[in-house]
Image (cartoon, rainbow, N blue to C red; front, top):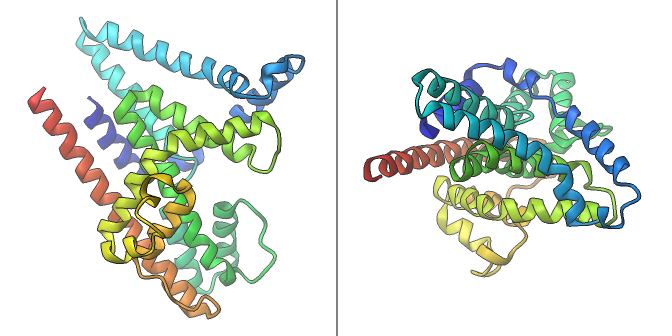
Length: 293
């Protein structure tokens, strides 16, 4: 069931561009604000308990829907199709909001055409900020964002979906949304959001980083680590960027427009190989599990 849901999710992500416009998380921001206002007088709002109370209702709702579908599908084949559709829909929704690979592809195509306005729009979406400098100067930063977003928007949701089904994918997506929303805010609630994200992203980030190594140069990737213990002790975001850049031997001069864009193209190609490798390995693991189970 999970394997079929993943196939549907990946196929929709690749071939149905309208999916990206349908994935909106503004509702979660409004919901979070409402919950924080409701808990304003509670001292323990500023910490892990506050984050738990914000996320728990959404997660429990998804868990209840999944449990109901599981229960009904045990005696009715029609409910099996409904369960499959629900699982695939949740996975597709959680692989977002937008596909970073497609966005960087569109940025590169726009730069090649000389369409600076379109390139700027894609860069602003990825960076989450308004660009005031020449757009080509952001190519180096786009490399880092791409290496991070592949984990947050593709590998992470897939990993937690395999591990815990729709509930896992939703929990991971909400942790990413909370972390982004409170990135530049101080306080106990923001710290707890960051902690939850880094806990949930730790293992997917290591898998993604190893995927970068196998899709690029394994030797250069390992050489770019400061020490072997980086594999488990380094901050996940730094580890992903360091591994991704190392896998393509990124030593180009970023002051030159051509070098920066060419370097971004190399990283993009490596990331595409990584996603393909990890999805194939995931499929093999699921199939072996079904056979042996």
